[in-house]
Length: 285
Image 1 (spheres, rainbow, N blue to C red):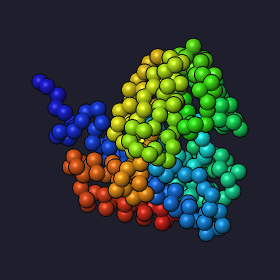
Image 2 (cartoon, rainbow, N blue to C red; image 1 turned 90 degrees about the vertical axis):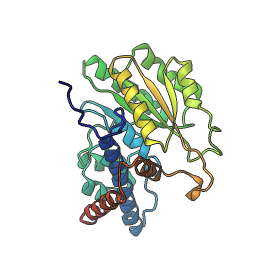
Image 3 (cartoon, rainbow, N blue to C red; image 1 turned 45 degrees about the vertical axis):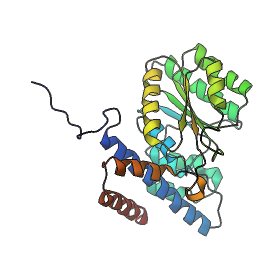
Image 4 (cartoon, rainbow, N blue to C red; image 1 turned 120 degrees about the vertical axis):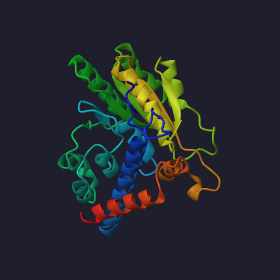
C-alpha cells in the first residue's frame, strides 16, 4: 500500500504550508516585540534601539531550521533576533529598554546562548566567526555558523581575507549579507558580496530580502551543502525600492501575507487571531 501524504492539498512539499504559517508567526512576533521595546525605550528617553525591522524575512528564513550546535554571529544585538533564537520575550522586552552596553548580557539572561561575541571591527568579527566554524569542525560537532554582515562594510580585499580560510578548510559557515535599505529600482543593486565570494570560490546567490519563501528555499539548499561538509556559502539580500508601496519599500510581512492569502493557505480570521494572540502575550509582559 502507498503511504498517505500528511501534507495539505496543493502545497509545495519543499516549503510546507505549516512551515509558512510558522514563519509568518515568528516574523510577526519579532516585529511586535521590537515595536514594544521601542515604545518603552522612548518613554525612558532612549530612542536609539537596534532593530531587525524590514529584515524579518531574512532573519526568520535563516534561523528557523538551526540546530542545537549551530552558532550565530550578528552585526549587533537586537530583541527581535533574540526572540528568533529562542530567547524569553519578557526578559528581552525588559532588557532592551536598558542601556545599549548591556544588550549582550540581556541575551544571555533571556536564554540566548548560541550568539558569538564579535570583535570591534567587522572584518575581525567575521574572522572570529570563521574561527568558530573551524572549532566546530575540529571538535567533530555537527553545528554550523551563520554570520551576518552589512553590505558595504567590507572591501573586496577584506572579503578575500575572510573567505580564504573558509574555502581552504571547507568550513561549515554561511555568510548572510544584509542589503541596504533600498536600491533605486529592481535589478539595480550590484551583487558586490556575491562577486567577491565567487571570485574566492564560494557559492553565492542574491535574494530579495522581502521574499521569505525564496529565502527559505535558498537557505535549505545552502544548509544541505554546508552540513554535508561542502564548505561555505554566501547569501546576499537585496531590498528594492518599489513604486506605490508605503515608504517606497516592500514590507516582508505584507509580502508573505499576500502570498499566504493568494494561495489560500491562511484566512483573514487566521491573521486576526495570530495578531490578537501576539498582542495579548506582549501586553502581559
